[in-house]
Length: 386
Ligand SMILES: Cc1ncc(COP(=O)(O)O)c(C=O)c1O
Image 1 (cartoon, rainbow, N blue to C red):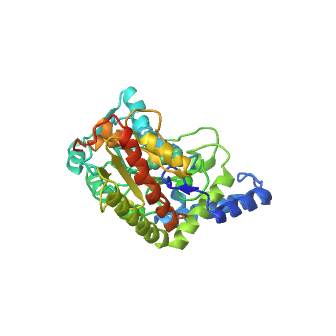
Image 2: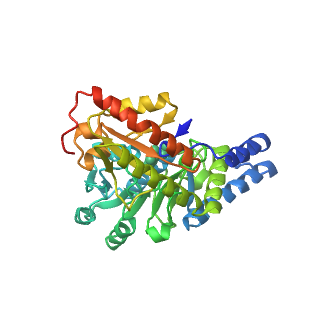
Image 3: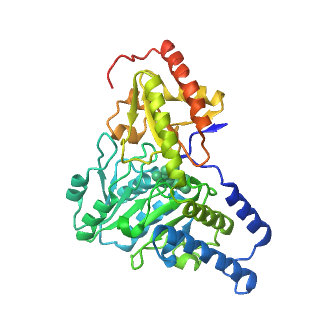
């Protein structure tokens, strides 16, 4: 199997699996219990908070465990809007993950005022537009650090500076950037930041929200004193242990993965562009998570390419795997100005820690023929310009 869909999810690192199974077998205590087997688990969770905090340049009291990246995103926005009932405005970008977009839509339906900041053809948010959109009513700006479909990295530092001058909080969805590029909450200047374990070779169903000390935020889940009474419920101890180990490995490996993935992705991009005519690369050339490659193959339906590659046990994605099937055309590809038929011809290859040169060789071997074959039978016009 050749897995080139690491932005959708990553395989569990064997060291994470090992740590989790050891914990699962040996430690069942409830972290809220006062006797030793409970306290021991509580200390383990504190250790994980410390590992995450250190990786983000934060303090461990600023880390709240959540049930996913989606939950962390929901929590950031709803929690802040709940804490500032007198404010009616929030600002997000047009290319956010549905976790942010749909939370904003929900709040909009309840009468709040949402501004959607447009992006340019590379998927970079229009900072001037954002600046002009801030009003006295704005409580929070939520912009993703890196986009899941294009990999484009947003100017969060600049946005945070602008927001601070106006007394507005900033949340960054760092689900796709954490573990791939530097994510330091002070350098980014953010007040809140979301991460997710399964994008960094950890388990699914666990994430975390960084909340800068002193930030006013309402609770997400009632019913317990856990997570500083912001998110009640007995903790997903096994998942949290997996998240901690995944983050520990990231810190230990430093730049190793980034360098190797960048090299593999650059070769893959070059080979695809050389071997396949009429291919359009989407996303920022430089300011990008380098392992994310989004291409449009004019005249084709991306799904056909995906399924043809899947018969060879090569797994890629069309648009965003999270929203696949839900909508006809990706909102991200529309926002960068692709016509619907071009957007529908787009596939995303996303590389990760476990990809090798052989994986790149395999897709370079298969893809040109698949594209050629489908184009020969395609009723769509491939001679048009993009
Ligand atoms: C940018 C971004 N935010 C949030 C999420 C949601 O994370 P989770 O799958 O942990 O809910 C994803 C997942 O694809 C993502 O890419």
